[in-house]
Image 1 (cartoon, one colour):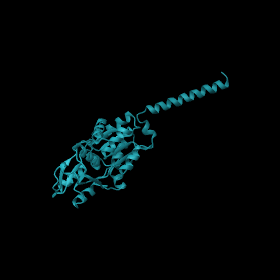
Image 2: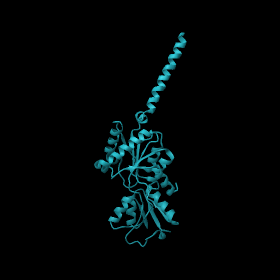
Image 3: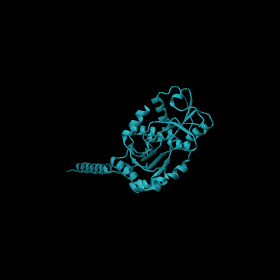
Image 4: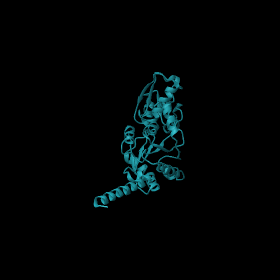
Length: 280
């Protein structure tokens, strides 16, 4: 074998060794997570409260630490996104987070259907937006909504999406719909008489009832707040993340920090059914 032939053979062997090493890395359940710089837990709390970035980062720090320890003893960065539009843009961007926790269920469902995100777990209680009126209001049913002023949260919010779906379902015609950013503002403006009917989340509806307000209707029950895994995550990583999240159910302190009582396994079909209801 001449010198040129020996060099060619060695080069081919080197390429084969490199290809073999790459195959081992790609076959590893943690391959994407190990190679990615995006060890992020991205949070969007919807429009229930006006919290600062630092307050949200503190709230979810223990959960992020738990997830990092469970997966590969890595640090997971908490990335709170307050604005729903920016949350969606970040989720659709090139640098995708490893895990997302989203409370705007319509946006979460579209990330599953249209962008390949994997549903991991969700809150077991169904999500139902509520239509509220002041105690002295003469409105008692959907049949009286026509021509009335309805106040809803942010246009991108899950609460708004399911409320509009319910109005279509029951055939309410020509309500005057306006929006305000946060659900607390809906309650304030209803109390001030600035709208006839308000739309709020289940949490805010309970507070409204406890304060003596009236809830005259609710939307159809749909899938609740959800944890998603990146579309880049392998099936093995998705399974590991799901198992780790379900294992939180015995840790009431950890769940209590983020306002969750229990996780249950999420199924893709639930999000497809939600989008059918929303006609989105």
